[in-house]
Length: 127
Image (tube, rainbow, N blue to C red; front, side, top):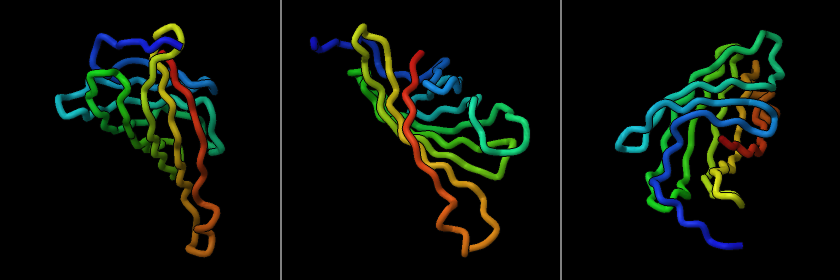
């Protein structure tokens, strides 16, 4: 494929949606690459109704648009915490694609149950 030159600096600000239908909104990214936002998950194993949950993250401000990033989601409706890390790429038609890997920590009631407390997965986000 052809190498696409991205004319602007990588900036995660705005709305993103993944293949599961989960959405996130990243508020303004500051000069250090730090950002806040909200995550609207479409999937949950919790018993309570899903609520939008705050996210806090940081990204590199790369000139080529292919920045790495990471953010934490503090789930409002469960005792779980998730961390995502990934990189932005330009897709075949130039649109931005976020490839991400996540770790989800579910609260367990004892050290004995620690072995089953963390899950991992992969999500692809687009605009």
